[in-house]
Length: 331
Image (cartoon, rainbow, N blue to C red; front, side, top):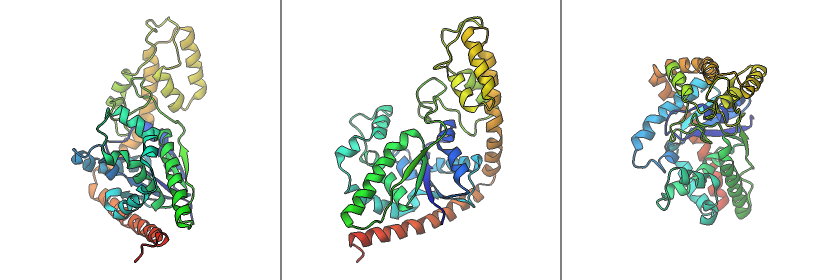
């Protein structure tokens, strides 16, 4: 049997290049050699979008289109919708008893999101507990590997804690240790120079962006504010254009030459932005074309989700049966 991957995304909007280098690239690369489950985590998205379920519902299809656009294949990977698998909620309920409030409060990912979303003292209980829901998703499929962004590592750590505690308490090895796999770039900066590309911060380049959108967003990219004239020496570090060229430009030797030229002066930001625009357009154009092709056949995409969800539910039900047996509640 192939080793198992569980990974996915919250449908709060279309996916961007941060998702691509953080996880999607690895998913495409690994899918021939793994049994891969791709969760569209709409229930988790509702933990901080409970007042706007329409946003979440509409973006389920957008995330599925992005999966298909980057090359994820429903013949090799199982696409499924979280809210349609009630077994995941039951597992979450049992796992909540294995985690303290203090442990949830220490989760760095939750801390960062609470700060970013300015929740302060109005944190919904569902949002506070969603690391446990995430653990239920991973453990329901007995995943060996989770390709995820760097910011998700604390979630994997908490998942392993829950798995070990369950096995210890109920004296059965139902679950195994899960490993995370961070993409080629741990964290892609936003076009404004902020530490992380994010839909909510409005600083993202999306997988389905048009050529005009890519051009516009690259023009807005943060560079060296002290590089006022072409002849001025410039700083490469913290310059988002160079960050992106380093990651996405296939000609690494030329990028290093450009860095040296920029540092000594005589190289304008406009030249660099034109090069980056071309690099991104060459990479995104085939994805955009595939996305448009599937977008024109929404019933086919819905069928992928229906079949995948039915198959995923069978797997989750089997795990739940093992859990209830270990706990002695299979009356």
